[in-house]
Image 1 (cartoon, rainbow, N blue to C red):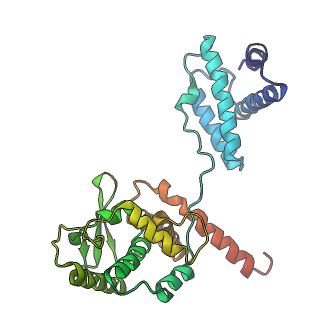
Image 2 (image 1 turned 90 degrees about the vertical axis):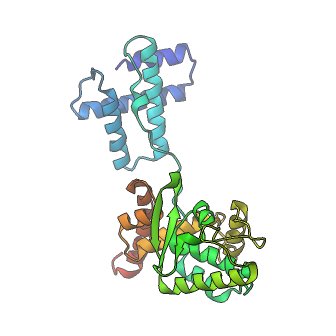
Length: 295
């Protein structure tokens, strides 16, 4: 690696500050030290991207902050752009690397006792709008479906006898979510009120509708969820997706298998579901500190 030449270029041609030059030089020397610790010769013969990827894993396993990892890889990207320009290498190996995302928020969730209090103590009303709004909250919490999936539900997707709901997810992919007896009774109550106030509709008609019997729209669902969740929580993010996160977290905390949660959520791969283990782990740490005599 031609670190000295690159630093000289940054100093004379780009006129970088001393602090920036020191940061670049430190990052590159750390990468070089990693290569040496791995027994890799300075001439990596076109395998640079593999070693960069290994370095990222090494840093992540050492609990280096994601923002720091991203900065160091940005330094490597600048270095290899320079090397391509001078003809020392044919291509920039960093372009083959998936850089860790910075600042990814852990999904928030609402404690069970707060949601139970909402459903048990708040008067939603017995008219169609009140019964519908309550069911929107329950449907999102009990099934983990997305707002768009709730809106797309048709009458024929809700099988009360079979106690399942057919959900159409992204790219038209369908999944079946089982529901319990108590929730089926709630579905029957909703359907009865809907039929009484709005009249009979076909299996292909929307399951959730406005008071003028039209399919729900995203802003309405968001408004319903936000208005009711503000009664039990002060968190800023109080939209429908919060209830999806809550469903997954509660399922995991009660012992559900991660692969089962993946299928219920309609995730394409397990990596998208594993983020919920962070919330569960935080709960376990809290319990451990409270319960263990030497914690």
